[in-house]
Image 1: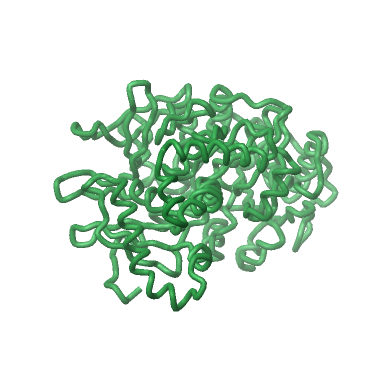
Image 2 (image 1 turned 90 degrees about the horizontal axis):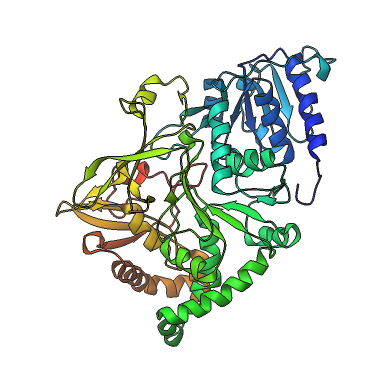
Length: 523
């Protein structure tokens, strides 16, 4: 724990044995569910391994689910045990807690609320069950960008095969030091940032605070990680605040920064500083979970920063494709992992784009208690439908265009992918988030502006900004339309002051904004 306790693998094993005795004493047996609701800490991993090693099914839950969703998930998965951090315990209703056999505090692994049935149960009394590859190891509830959360069932075989494929993609050694900043309940961090380094005997350092600049900077300087995993938002913020914004003030700076040769020089210089900020030892900075905007990707490539790109879903545990540092192609997620087959269905002959379907040893067993949803995501021959549209280049590198459900059909029959336009909008230094929707045949961008940056630029903020907002919107629209195809040009920019409602994985709940747009003035 950064700034806290340090565990050896031996210490870790003893905690697993002791917690297993508590579970056994409370009457838990193979196949029972253990819900895990906690911020990142070494004991999060202790709870996870205690469950899966002893044939129990772990149910990691994202901390940002609402109290109602938490109750629903714990009830829906039939949990008999709950491992929970003190801060999050209050979000679970007493009605749900009273139905559990045991509640464990992740802070100290002590039992809260009630004593287990056999408090004197010893580690040596715990039977070791026969756990098979086809047994369910985890149920992970997706964050519901387009619907209510669904429980993804992953087997021991799914997770083990994922680790083997990651080893082929990028070797990790016991000397490696991971700095873990993403929620462990997210499949990306859990598989690549916990299971994989644990399997290699590497060291993982957990950060218990949000990865803001003020918390990350000292941690990276002290930990000096060799491996980190991130979502695009973190590195995009660094680029926009430290590089792009500095060359958006003044005509001369703007002009120079618009020249590619000048950009490369600045990016190379900034890259050296960035490497030092990250501690100077970083050899792998994995980016996944969403699309990285083009301007940030260009900066990272020019800077010589060791970034990697990955693509996958919770349902595939998660990686499907990946490109390691030095092998990243612009806008591509890299080739599919060794051991996975992928093809395109319903291909558009004009563009070569189609839905990506995969056959992977890491593909889920199905959605828990939802056979209809399970049937809908598999083809007749058993391949998994990702619902992502994309294409492959001649060398087998995969390019993601957007979600099948989000695609907009243009007036001329063109396929328009709002995610691609949003990536350009979000690369503007004044923009935090955006959603592109269709309104009467035209594309409209709903934009949440970076208020901090606006305040820095306009001293008499309220009065001056009210006069400037029309110009700011126009500037954003011109910026975007100069970088996208004719069919993808936006016709209007609307400010969304309140920010967008997001899922626990910080993805915008698109369905709330795309299904039916309200007339102006009614937001």
